[in-house]
Amino acid sequence: MRLSKMHLHTLREVPGEAEIPSHIWLLRGGMMKKVVSGVYTFMPIGYRTVRKIGEIVRQEMDAAGAQELHMTHLMPAELWEETGRWSAMGPELWRVKDRHDRDFLLGPTHEELITDIVRNDVSSYKKLPLNLYHIQTKFRDEARPRFGLMRAREFVMKDAYSFDRDEESFKKSYQDMYVAYEKVFDRCGLKYRIVEADNGAIGGTGSHEFSAFSDYGESDLVYCDVCGYGSTAENAAGVDAPPVDEPLLETKEVYTPNCKTIDDVAEFVGLTAEKTLKALLFQVYDEYEEDGKIKYRVKEYVAAFVRGDRQLNMIKIVNALGIAEHMIEFADEAVMGELTGAVGGFTGPVGLKNCKIIVDSEIPGLKNLLAGANKFDTHMENVNYGRDYTADLITDLKLVGEGDACPHCGAPLSKTRGIEVGQIFDLGTKYSKAMNCVYKDENMQEHLMFMGCYGIGITRTMAAVVEQYHDDEGIIWPLAVAPYHVIITIVKNSDEEQAALAEKIYTDLLSTGTEVLLDDRDERAGVKFKDADVIGIPIRITVGKRASEGIVEYKLRREQDRVEITAEEAIEKARKLIAEEGSNPSIPLRTLL
Ligand code: ATP
Ligand code: MG
Image (cartoon, rainbow, N blue to C red; front, side, top):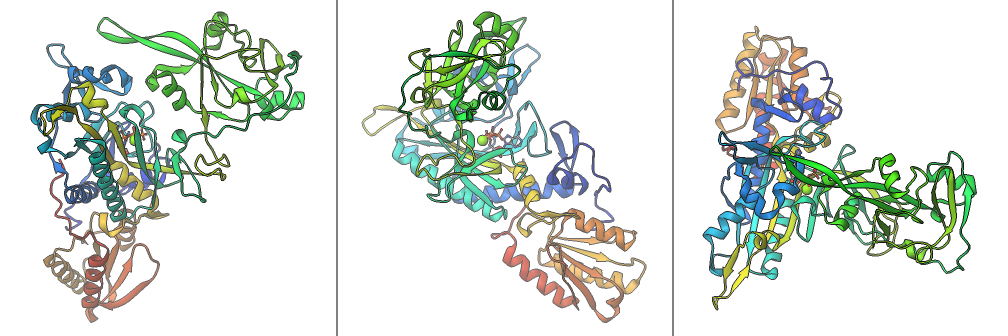
């Protein structure tokens, strides 16, 4: 492609909205343009990388035996009502109506539609196992779209769905996808960690997340260097402190003026935070329909208690209550206080009424804790579970963090951040049961199918690659996903020898299928070099003053070194590197959608 003909619009300034490197460089490199918050158009250069990542995924899915189909974006609400997700997905679900006022949605994921296809088409064990996938635009009305492609409202995802006759067979399907995912992310050049994860709104019973290393990732991960355990922090099981063996002391009120936080009160009374009880107050909603709109009202209040130095894990509360994430929020303390007796900053479990009490699993084993007294500026000493209060639910509520015990071996855990680029799920029979997706075995007995689903964020992966491959000048694409392999920069267009040599290298590289850009624009050399760096083309061949001798400059974007060699040597070097590091098998760049 000749840059003089290409629609490429790079930016000199950092766009105000962009905070993290991938967002900045994808915009500045002219790879994409913002339409509205969380919605982007891919420009010709950027779309090539989207297609390349898509193609790597496609090749690995095909190689693992999955079959590509293409499902619609638009789905009728009735299908999603069958599984309860029309309501469970809450405001993230992009709902639309047709001209007859019928409810539809724009797909955030496709379990319902694929299960509908399979329950209608497959009736015998002979057709199983089956794995179907597509690469398609997804819609999620995210509460906080941000960081460009990282958390978008419209994004490209690959989603695959496996159907098996039993658990044993499912395990193999899951393992095949696990391995295929490793190949995909290896080929994209990503450095990543695979961890155990929560199933979230997708449901089911087990999951792994593929998380690319990055300080800007939104996934908190914990891992153990001793036994190799790794998990998203929200999914990691907390280890209870050992029970304390000491006599129960008399409860006693203490005056604790202005001590609203655990640290304040612990310091004031001279205790460590481990000897205190922390309260967190929530309101839980239920939904109802009014004038054809879904509305929410407070159904009940919940007071959750953890040891003072612990953090509460919201996902564990949500799972314990069996509700969707959007159905719970921190309580309006004034309103809750009137009903339950809670006093913001001074809430304790003793004497609370009209609300559900949930305590962390280690609390009953701890003794003589300091808790709020449900009285302004007052705490209560020596509060003990069983003697002074009981709970509606006792369960692990701990958010596991740095230094906490590994649930497998007890060694202290480390913590890091990552970008969730892919996730695979054991769905069990959640969807097949809800939608009656069954097969008949050899004896004509009916059974539910075992399902798995497997997602890769194609466009989020693109952002993750840029997070890991950039410098102060722009993107440094790995060859396998670079929009073009080589850029030939002509220092002075008007110099005929330079133009002719550049043209010769260009045609030569093109003839063997190298993806090459020729910067033949009427611009100063400095502008051309800057653009080449911003858009991150891996190999640059500069044709300048020594063109008359057949000498060019060869430079890799990822290295500082540059060498002066003959044009033939440069072509040879480029070809060799592409063969080594470019995608193998090569990518035909079929259309993505
Ligand atoms: P997150 O926890 O980040 O919200 P999720 O767990 O809801 O993601 P999945 O349903 O597992 O996402 O979707 C599969 C993949 O799609 C994710 O691993 C991620 O790469 C990508 N993805 C999900 N949400 C978004 C989004 N809002 N923008 C871009 N990519 C996304
Ligand atoms: Mg996920």
